[in-house]
Image (cartoon, rainbow, N blue to C red):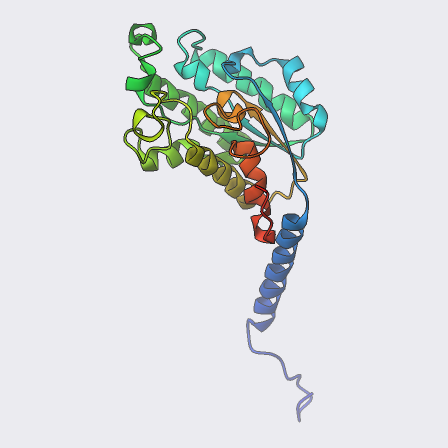
Length: 259
């Protein structure tokens, strides 16, 4: 108390600053605790599988691992595989089903946009005439618009793989797509090892930004989740995106999950 009985208070705003500092410290401690945890990553992926073929049974079987977070990257075949091209209406219907099933299983859901493709390489394996007026990259943009609208409507985090790949372009040695210039293969759809690392980092950043602290992560999708083109394709380790996802999520603890 002062001479006239008044309290000697701290400067204005001091308590607010102290609270913010305390909250920041608590958040940092939680992040450290998360990094120290052994995050389990599960994969359910089928190369060549169109998204519209996903049904309740397939989803429920995948969700039996009871994930805290499910990361879904589906649609490249629907947009680019001439044998299984899908309509926007069918894509949206399947997306609604998947969102309902995953959220209904008490898992958080992260959607991932489809990467662009190198159409010149793609047309070496898939006839251009099959696509009609809507070429692959235009179809990809349409499906990505559906994904973005769903993410906004359902308030779901969105990992923008399309933007990540576009930063390096779809041509030349620096591209994250497998091309003759960087891998000796006229692929144009699947990612290089660096591309899978960029995908893993993009998903890990999205998980952090959403404030999620999962112990179990389920990655579902097609050949991009499977890791086609990677020497570790089909594995939850090494250079596949699920394998590198764990590395990026535990990096803050100084662990090297590649060993």
